[in-house]
Length: 196
Image 1 (cartoon, rainbow, N blue to C red):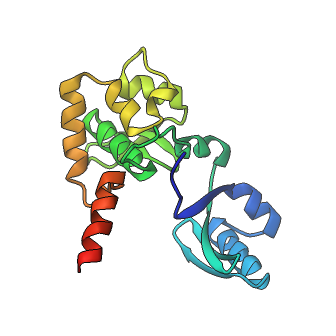
Image 2: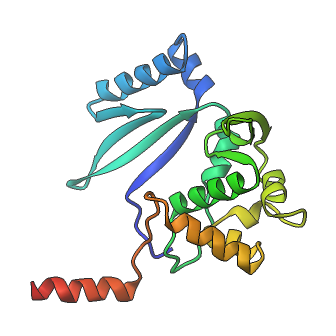
Image 3: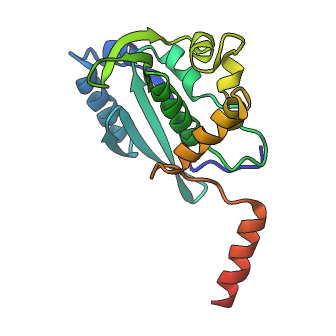
């Protein structure tokens, strides 16, 4: 509410794409999807699991990221956010917070697979869960549920204050951490840009 998205993310099940294009594997299925969309006159690019599509609309263009992933129905739950109005945080911030929290508890968070243990080398170990309710209980405590993983704010609220403060401070050190400027900051930027 009150925010404008920079793009649209669509999560598509890998098996469905493989079956539709009769592809030998996920990589060739993504390539086939990319080529199919291109054949319809749209510009595309591929990176990782994504097929990026430039969609013209009303004289401008918008980006649609088609993410081809296994177990899409379950994984899509990881990318639904319950961000409070006025929040300076986006979905990427929530994913970073979850990754840092998981690491602090000896786990590894994958936004495309779920929660894993860590092996002796600190790398991805055994699969633990892709159920958000269970993941919330593991990361936040036994009385937590999937709604507690809906936003940065809900995650921090579910933790004791000292842990929440330390988690947020650690997250802000990450180079991928980006906050949305508040309305007051945006107004000040507009004022200053008019002076330059």
